[in-house]
Length: 180
Image (tube, rainbow, N blue to C red):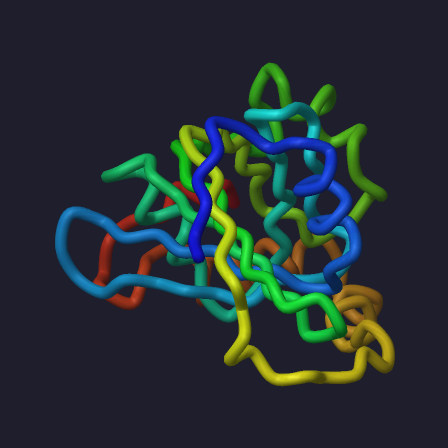
């Protein structure tokens, strides 16, 4: 049975910290809805109603483009281990780019990463838990090192060139605002 909460409590925070991945859902005013799996050390719960997520370079940049139109975001975690539970955090998000006044302050919450495109500062409006009884068991083996190897083989200029080529527009052709 689903339960709703006005904010994250300590049990929710502990559940989030135990998960190795999360999902992000956004949508613009029209076009495609985007749902992305995320991992690495890129998310911080910084208060009962606030989450920071450092967005690293990827093959697209849908979230940033969607937030330029509609600033809503849903984050979701699923337990793939013994405790069956799904946790969703609904809210609004603002995009913080490198060079913005509060980038340095927010970036201090994360290990440095040369491919950080944005930090999304999410203000939660509601938290919901549900059973997760149909979520399969899966064993965690390790984080992938593919992203880090890719970054290690690129100069900062190469990463920016990739952003120009792959991250300037959404798959619907809308701007993402990624700095280059």
